Image 1 (tube, rainbow, N blue to C red):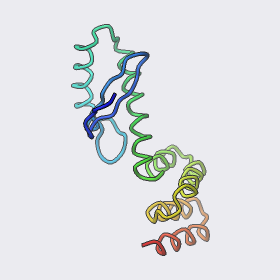
Image 2: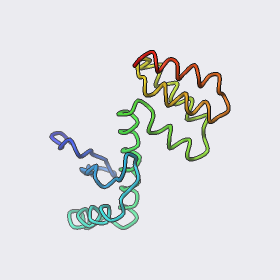
Image 3: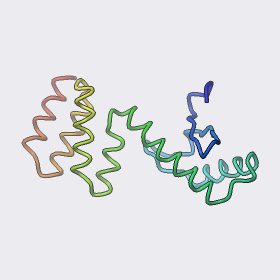
Length: 138
């Protein structure tokens, strides 16, 4: 969808393209604010009465995943790495941050996030090196 406001993004559901407001997510992550999401769902039901509750569930999950990707891009990998770590997938989170740093090695915040994650994974020496690299970039 072209011409979307900056506070919206689009998702597709089959051939349907829907504009999703970013404010249906709370905090700095992709956590759905159920109250705002209920209003959004009602608007979608009124616009597209053929959408079932299940279709709206799928649409909301697609929107959540898209928001994760958007936040990940905006934070140079830090958003998705936090989600991976919260799922107990710390090595995947470390790998994800490392891949982002290969593309943008000048991002001090991502180096610092990598250092924290490496330390939590018991890899303190590597973590301290990542911290040091981040400090060099400030």
